Image (cartoon, rainbow, N blue to C red; front, top):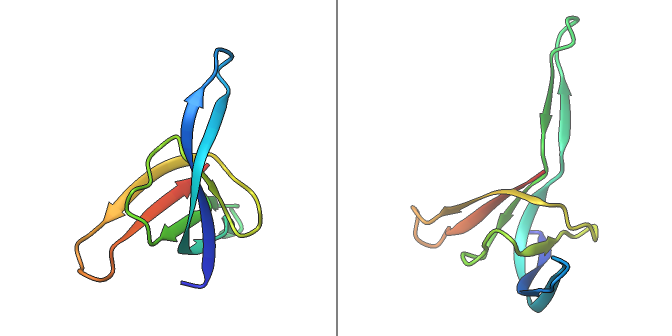
Length: 95
């Protein structure tokens, strides 16, 4: 996979609700940037959010993933794929 992402684990949350980040780890990934697709003359527009295919199986909601461009968008969904041995990966969709 051509990209590298940095994953920050949640350490704790203070009394103000602010998250403290703990240990970090890196993983290889393929990051597909968000796209807006436009259709016909009737303006059929579809938005596809940023998606990352990450070679890390232990990602959970609440962690922060820093993408290669330095941004850390909010995670919308996480899907782990383990059907094919050797091609295990996690698909993370961002908001």
